[in-house]
Image (cartoon, rainbow, N blue to C red):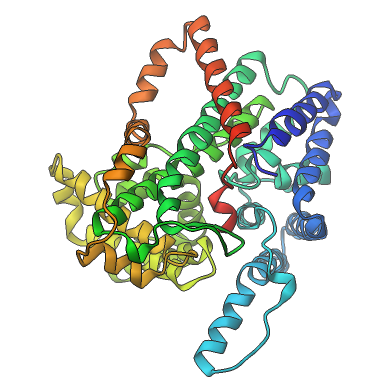
Length: 474
């Protein structure tokens, strides 16, 4: 179920909020748990046992780690059991066919694909990391094990952040999960509604609109099948391909950040404070700065649970670079089961290593050129990211980007999409936030703005074929 649909906005969400608010204090987590399981099962009910099994594995592992507190061997065994149990499901559903395809290509074999792994369970990349962080934190004694399986299940399958993040650690919400009375107030609900509407507007009004430029070039695909032909990447001129890549970069940002903001807003409506996931990444002055602003909860997860345990920067430059290589290779693999994602991760490892060794100090002294440098390299990174998509082709895309060629020009597309591109660029800066902060204390203006945005979003959803959330595929 997608957030930006009539089904979700006018059926699931109102019913769920009504049940949650009307439930007695001690049953609120149960209401949240049941409604989240319905949300999870809506698209593919066959994956319901996967979610239940993952909950049980990590719930009982947490209890066992706590129970055998004085036995290092047993605590370590149950930690490994929980991590292997969680990762095995992620590897099976997300990577097994990719591994088979790679083996077939390397050795000329014809091993058949696993049909059960042809569809990715909803949000598995996100909730797998959440459950692992819980078990690791219990093992480290950073949090106490959760004894109430309903409360733990509500944390794992909580629908606001299930499909798009942010990646919420158990310790981020543990205290709130155990506040059964007065968990939320009207101010939180009001703030949550505003965040949700702004996130919905980012997704529907900007991401879905600006995406049409990119799809007009590569064509519209559904399930890998061409639905509507576009110009064709091979027929587009180099300036048009760069314009399309700009549109894709903006689409990806507003799509993902919009979904995250909707999740944060719904969490706040229910009394939970999820961490922010984006902080204007396209104003970055370096690649290091970009990754402090983009998908911040993922970067934080890898730093805390991979980079620092490997030694971080405490064991010399050589070891630090190796640790960065491991982290960024895993980051690429996390985003998708294809070699272009592995290359994407290594690409950022190289850039971050260069900045770490000598370039970052120079970038900090610059004013304009560091922004140009960062935006250009991020755009190239998105070309790697999208290179495996239907209608693209990595080699064709990079040839078009870096070997000047003729073809269909940019004039028509600038006339059609110039305004939305300009709006998207402005909205990727702090300017709209500054303007909003000036009116947010004026109740009439704020309500008017939110109502207008909501009506526009609903009109766009009703009138168009809504674009799915891009990270469903990753």
